[in-house]
Image (cartoon, rainbow, N blue to C red):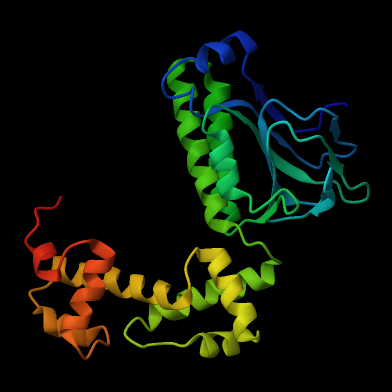
Length: 286
């Protein structure tokens, strides 16, 4: 494969990679390879035995494809492809509209857990990226640090940025098309804006034009919580903020958040924070 005009690439020397995997921080997560391929016509990679590292490819323009044991998937702008270590694969650019990609290879003891958090399952290795500008900036930062030098300090900083990126991809995982993910995001925003109201699953589902059961399943998959529990946690987060920043009585805060019974409010607060509202208020913080 020939190079691409404007490409950037940095590969950590393998002796340094082995050294880094024996050090405290980079033994957990290490960026071994990183790059940027613009308009990567004829780009193709085939690894019948898989790679020793996890591979993350973020597409910003054009399109590509990836063939895995579970089948072939397409990757377009605003999407990330995540391939765990050891999974056989072949990927490449679409001929008529080759992709522009930022990519990383990752090694270390925590890679499996981090990739597992970002990847719902191997049959759905493509993630809709919620904030493409932020994700690209993170890969660019990793690449810049690797291009600067191969010092321990640069390797550690690159690992920290890569950890941030994987955490964002985990937060963006959807398990469904981007339109459905948008429906969940909009529902979350609606709940934040109506934190003192008890909003039903049926109401949110109607706004998303989905059935209540379908919406509830999408919401739980995207957030890890049912709608009611998610609402409660939002309310308790707001309660914590009011306890920290105002002199309002606990009963007043309860009413402001839609709880007519301050005792029930206190029980809900304790269930989330492990302490009563009054006990939380007198804790030393900061």
